[in-house]
Amino acid sequence: MYRIAIERLYKWKEGKRRKPLIIEGARQVGKTWLMKEFGRQAYEDTVYINFDSNSKMSELFSSDLNTDRLIMGIELYAGRKINPNRTLLIFDEVQEVPRALSSLKYFYEDSPQYHIVCAGSLPGIALHEGTSFPVGKVDFLSLYPLSFKEFLMATVGERFTKLLESRDYQMITAFKQTYIDALKQYYFIGGMPEAVLNFSEEKDFNEVREIQKRILAAYEQDFSKHAPNEIVPKIRMIWNSIPSQLAKENKKFLYGLVREGGRAKEYEAAIMWLCDCGLVHKVSRINTAKLPLKAYEDLKAFKLFLVDVGLLGCMTGLRQRTLLDGNDLFGEFKGALTEQYVCQQLKTMSDLGIYYYTNDRGSCEVDFVVDTGEQVVPIEVKAEVNLKAKSLKTYREKFNPEISIRTSMADYKEEDWLVSLPLYAVDCHIKNLLVP
Image 1 (spheres, rainbow, N blue to C red):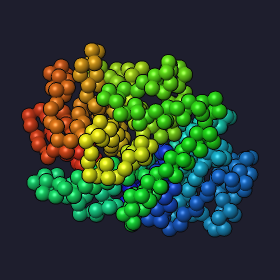
Image 2: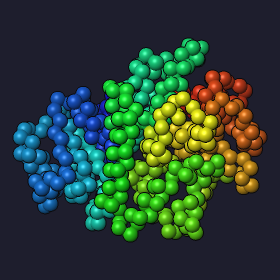
Image 3: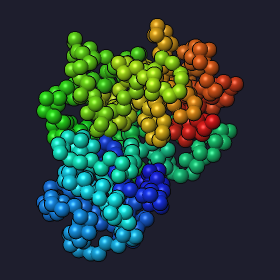
Image 4: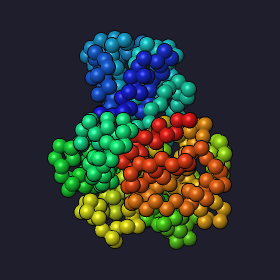
C-alpha cells in the first residue's frame, strides 16, 4: 500500500539539519511498516532493532551513551558494518529502553551523519520516570490510519485517485457512484492498514470486522500495560462512552454519559492519556473566529473522536448491510460516522488547528472550524444531500469568512461565499481550498 507520509520521510532524509526522527501515532497505524518500506526504497541497507524484550540492546544502552561505542555495539548485533550515508537505523518500540531514547540527543550533537528513525508508544515513553527526553534534538512525524485518498489507491486504483486530484468535476461527477461506493466501504473498513490490506486482497467484510475486533482488544490490553493503575478503569469508561457521545445530535462530550454525576476532574487524566496515545482526537469549542483560534479555545467544551471510523463502527456492532444498503433506523448515527470521517481526514493535514463553533446561546453550531495560520474556515458536515446551511449562514453573517465549506453527498458547486464539496473529495480538495 502507498502511504503519503513516505514523501515526508524523503524530505527528512535530504534535510540539511536532519535530526533523529520519531514517528508518532497510535498502535497499528503502520509505523513499523512505513519505516521498513522507507529503508527498502531509499537506502542500500537497513538495520532494524526492536527494543521490546531485547536484553542485548538494554545492556548496550545501560551505560555509556558515547555514539561511537553504541554504533560498534549495533554493528556487532546486526553482524555488519553501518555506513552512515547508506544505512537507515530503525529503533522500534524505543520506549522499552529509555536510555535509547536519551541517546538520540548525542546522535544529533555528536554523530549527525547517521540516519535514525524511531517509533514507539508515546505513553510508554512519557511514563518512564527518569528518562531524559531529547527536547529539541529530534524531529517528529505524525502517522494516522490511511486517509480516504490512500484507501482509494489501495482498493479502486490510482486512476480514480488521480481523477479526483485533477478537480475536473464534470468528469468526477460522471464517475461519482464509484467514489460514493468506496466511501461507504471506507466508513465500514476504516483506515487501519491491516484491515485495508485484507479487504483489498480478499474483499471480505467479515474478515475485516474480525481484524478490527483484534485491534480493539489490543488497545484494551494497552490500557492495562501502559496506563497508571488508578486511571485504567476511567480510561475504559471514557473509551466505551465515545460511540454514545457521538450519537447525540449535539456531540459535545458529557461526563454524565460516562457515569451519572461524573465530573471533569475525575476523568481529565484518562482523556489526556487517550489523546497522548493517539487513540482519540479532542476537538475543542471556540465561540469567535479570530486568529489564532487556540487563544479562544474553550477548554471545558469539546468533542472526542476515535482514531478511526472503521473502529467506531466496530465498537457499535454496525453491520455492513446497514451501512452499504441504507436503513432508516440508521439515520442518526450516520451523522456521527460522517463527522468522524471528516475529522479523520482533517487530522492528516499538517499545521491545521481543528475546532468547532457554537454561539453562547447554543442556537448555532458549525461542525468544524479550522485555523490555517492565515485564515479561519468554517466547515459544515452533512451525511446526505440535505443542503440547508442555517448555522453556516448565521456564522457567515457574524464573522464574514473569506470562504465557507459545506461537505455532503451532493455534487460540487461553487457559489459566491460557499463551496459545496462532495464528502469523497474532502481529503483531496480541502487543502487546495485552504490556500489563500
